[in-house]
Length: 152
Image 1 (spheres, rainbow, N blue to C red):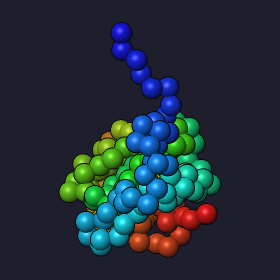
Image 2 (image 1 turned 30 degrees about the vertical axis):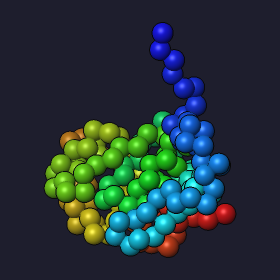
Image 3 (image 1 turned 135 degrees about the vertical axis):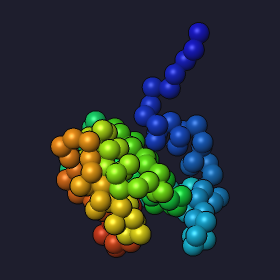
């Protein structure tokens, strides 16, 4: 018989990965900047980011589009979404605007986190969706007030 975890993805990873026991070990390293986040910081950063996502209106069952390259902010956004019980819809940062537009429409994303380097693609995506857009807001990781940078 198969057994499945009862926790959400975020709490399962914290528990299974024994994050609290890893303390000062490095959990994430940004390939572009070399920035490092230790396990002792990661859980709190994700939970605070989840609170800020909630303040932006993301709720249980809502969809967050994560249109980012591989970076620390991607992990924080994805797991903050999971901690809220929302749904992350990751997309390829190499997408053309029309491709992203279809994914945004089809997923029903209400919020998107991205990088300003993809802002033109996002603008085009909002014009080329496959249905009526549900997207209410786009936030950029370069902005200091982006939820991925929230600290306690």
